[in-house]
Length: 434
Image 1 (cartoon, rainbow, N blue to C red):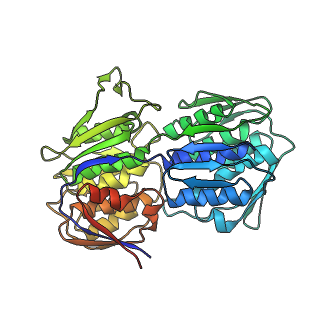
Image 2 (tube, rainbow, N blue to C red):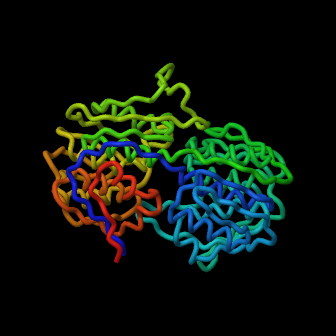
């Protein structure tokens, strides 16, 4: 397995372009199954999860190919209705195959995705929504078998605003007969992006980005060309990279409104942040920066930072996917801070690896208590999941000496050209292929 080797202590400076959103691109690519016509998706990042999804589309019967940052999913014929374990095990987002195939074929059999390093992440909310739409569900021999005689719109209230369940329900209901109303829906920008894509194909979806989404079913969807929004988690990670290395970075093709909770915490800690050509008004939204017009963000370290507590929450709260990176930053911020994880039950595994670098972190239940240290020292560490891996990269960039990060295949799932981008910013980083 490949390793990443970092000689830390260098201040990051320069400009980095933020890639398209992985968490938008995945459901949008699965949504291409809702039409037999050609779909062209632009601003798609080059990541392992994207490759897995393209393999999935080809296996199911939707010929797809990626050239540069554009995926073309071509005219299709007959679809398979079975998603085997060998494909599903590579990526939990594979369960998003269920919605479109249930809508198109009225049946789908998907292998259960199995365990996840950061928590149980059950799909029962997805299945309950399918039942509300009139589907029959049977779990047998490691597969979820879902079928219907035709989906019917209904009112569905989630007990928790699950992103995946909201996406799967959207994908299933756009071709259902009648009106579907999703209550307590996830509000993430990726949900809004998926809805915009579905509408570009002829769907009738309103309210995406709020807690109530209304879908009026249509008989057929057509092809479309669409551009994916920027990746807010990648953007947040590079902002924290500037903070932890006491550097100065300009982010291009970023959307500050999508990471306002992170920007607010960075500002309160003492970082200087400018949104080019934008000002703050009203409730603090960045004028001119929305889903359709990416902006340029400049972040600069000018003085020692102050510790800031965070607690993760569903959007628009502080994102759980940036919790690990914040812990890395607080490890080098003088004073004490508390990080409370409310979304996943097992998302502090990076804490033990940060201790190997010299951090002072104590985990108690859902909270991690961090006491900032003067410096970190390079050491061998291991990534346990995607965002934990990002946190280790950030910590190693700031640490004195050499660090070796193993199991970096986790990083390849969510950060496009990570070493190249960091090297361009001045990091001493390389990948060792084994």
